[in-house]
Image (cartoon, rainbow, N blue to C red; front, side, top):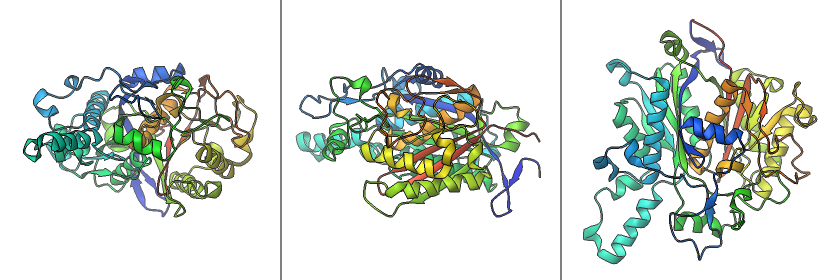
Length: 434
């Protein structure tokens, strides 16, 4: 059947392609700005400016710079939105424009929006608590709850583009954005929609957000050298750096995209999800749950491990997490993952773009999914910066400090979260016509 592929159980399913990407990140507002900064090895991390962090042990973050919601959102609508929702709406506008997406009235009835959000509207929550404490309940904004709740990112996007299919938030900690992409793809694969707008959004650079992660001893304390603070797989890594932003993608059925002559970045060909069922914050030994997620994604796509040329790692810059992910990758991909650095051949390259963006929490998986699609479309692999003294327990080729050119047909993106939730997405070079 045109536009369809056989699924793992022999059931014909519609293929899913990416036709639009919209990014709002610490590296820039817009996909091109972010992509060019990634390839140049630039860091988006600096001193916190959104609140006075002088008394905090951690005073750095990856903030979105020069954010002006008026570029995307009319003034009267801004009062309804927390900063994370503004980012989501802005990224969606960029993605829809990039895809040149136009929907018929009939298509709008099934088109939907899934946005992964790890925490929600902390800015609004903290502002509302301050209002209660200083001015009383009578001065609380009627938009407080809509600003706080996670599903309003998807809801606001749905309202903006009249998407009348399913619209909801997916919350699975740092895997939220990846799960949103995977679930949106499933909706199309089953033939329930031709178009889904999906991704992730987060903005937690607030006293509660930074203070909470700081108390868990999860964050880097390299306050005097912020651009070098996020250093995945390096022996000197001391925790992740909080980032903020949004990544929204337009997913379409292959049938629709080809019919309208859309530019296709890549195919979202595989989706794997698993749970460690092991620990509140620590990964299972040897990344056992991560291994299963990667294997499920490969099986779902019908792609063997030797065909994957690049992995965008979860790689948060935490001592335990980076080592366990490295072991998991080595277990799934075998000797290819351990071949000499820089060799193209059939060697597997891995990098963590969190070294430049920081960790966007609920938005991270969506951003890194978008980056994975761009690697396929553009033929360049972003580096892991600040990898100056590789940890022997992380013995893979992490593309240290300099981007590389490479034609890759399949890219895997990993996202893991507190509670032991794991998600792996496989992106493939689009091949096939109606």
